[in-house]
Amino acid sequence: NSSIRLAQVERHYVQGESRLTILDHADMEIRAGEMVALVAPSGAGKSTLLHIAGLLEKPDGGDVFVNGTSCKGLDDAGRTDMRRSSIGFVYQFHHLLPEFSALENVMLPQMIRGLPRKVAADRARMLLEYMRLGQRVTHRPAELSGGEQQRVAIARAVANNPYVLLADEPTGNLDPLTSNYVFDAMTALVRQSGVAALIATHNHDLAKRMDRAITLRDGKIIDHVLV
Ligand code: ADP
Ligand code: ADP
Image (tube, rainbow, N blue to C red):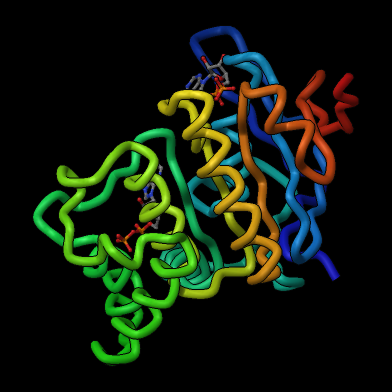
């Protein structure tokens, strides 16, 4: 039972006469509770892969399955619904809304889905406490450290209990000590929630601590052995 599966996914970019193949009948599968490192040099297609897995971009061929459901036949509204209900995103820069408190930032995705304010607030508080931010709920992003901001962003990403968590260099902007702390918090949350996590990182030490690593080669998604 995979939480996210790419089946024979194709993605090409056409520039004038030339055609650049990023994904060539690529397959990938991540199970619930699994943490997978995405390791590849820049330009290899990591963002493209994350965008396709996150239903932000349509592949030119193949299909993406979220918790076993094919996304091929979905129209834009269907893809947006699926993304909002089933997929969480974390970026290198937190992208929190500056005018809102930590609590409100984590409430927002739940409110967009139509959950009552009280339910959203209770869950946001629980997630922030889990991320050891219980003393920071009323702080705005600018009043938080870089590591705290990223932990709020991670709490927000899982606010709607997604099947899939996609992270693009989530610790790329942090010093090594803070990176470790944020990574530990993220790991605990992944294990506790059973979300399937795909985490792009250039941090070799963090990649080694995940269940396995993948990379992109000749348009295929393949296992990557970290030594
Ligand atoms: P990464 O995230 O690993 O740096 P990307 O997925 O952003 O890689 O890009 C992979 C390759 O595809 C790069 O060579 C990039 O220049 C190219 N590319 C990305 N987006 C486009 C686009 N919209 N049009 C043309 N080429 C693109
Ligand atoms: P919202 O619910 O705020 O309208 P969407 O449903 O459009 O957001 O997108 C869901 C998630 O995908 C959000 O975390 C948003 O930041 C992210 N996102 C939306 N568009 C893009 C994009 N072009 N590139 C990267 N991330 C995006």
